[in-house]
Length: 122
Image 1 (cartoon, rainbow, N blue to C red):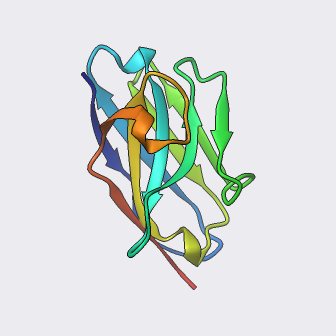
Image 2: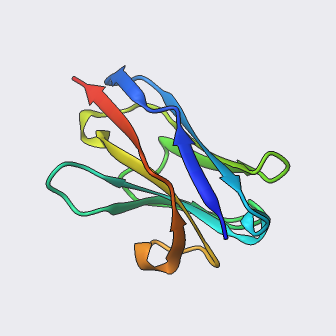
């Protein structure tokens, strides 16, 4: 069982940066792959990035590659999403998720946070 709480969202101008955090509780966090997904109004939830349990492997959606960086600190039970060069199309509710393996498929994740709003103004 893993409980997830996101933080760090907010309003930022295009070209700016934000860092999201996802604090996890539960004994299985350190064995879990983590992912970030996002959902904009009127759109389906989409994959953003994922990281392996050790942090050694990552994967990104093409739309964020080179701008976003996922990382994790297993000692702090936290996963991070550093977002740079933000664009208005990055506006969405961002969710972190935990699962047993890296995947870009939201159905592969068993635990989800409540989400944090990111708004990028032009």
